[in-house]
Image (cartoon, rainbow, N blue to C red; front, side, top):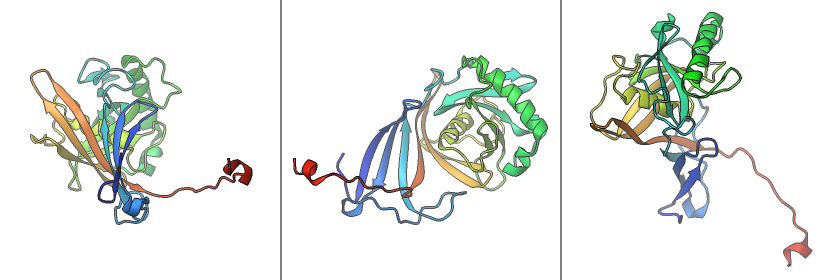
Length: 251
């Protein structure tokens, strides 16, 4: 698509989940701009913003919004919401593991008893979600929820899954925000549910916050996620040159 007012829309198809992403990249003068004042918590420095709108993210791996068919499953005495939005996740309350939900990534990584218990729940959740034996698989991911304490909508911790994510993954943010908005999940009672749509869900994570703009419908049929928007930054990571012989270039 052509650039408009120094911005170029780019349509992306995610190779792992087949999700469709509409990105808007700053391209003044037809050249990608990397400089800007957009800042992401947990990422050093600032750069030009890239607006991302994720669509068709529901059920990309398991084929269902709620892969187990339930809003909450009891797994080893832990209430868990199994959800597939952008990435399949097993989501629980931090308090059910004896945690506050405000622990640092380092503190959680040192808590081997918690990780052992969480992994047992994750493996059983994967089986319930129709994903088979996930012992050696990085999905489903795992997330913890707690009441917000720093002005956000809810406090979260995200696991990769065998280490704590130092911030928050874009895919995990969409799934956790969807969990917050869906009535009857483990998020109930931890955050006030807004009535407007689209709505910005502010997820507090181990290094700050991430905002997720969610467009959704709540109808008699049920809850439906239309899209989720986030802002990332454009950072040039590498550049290369290809040398072509003059004889070839000349035709």
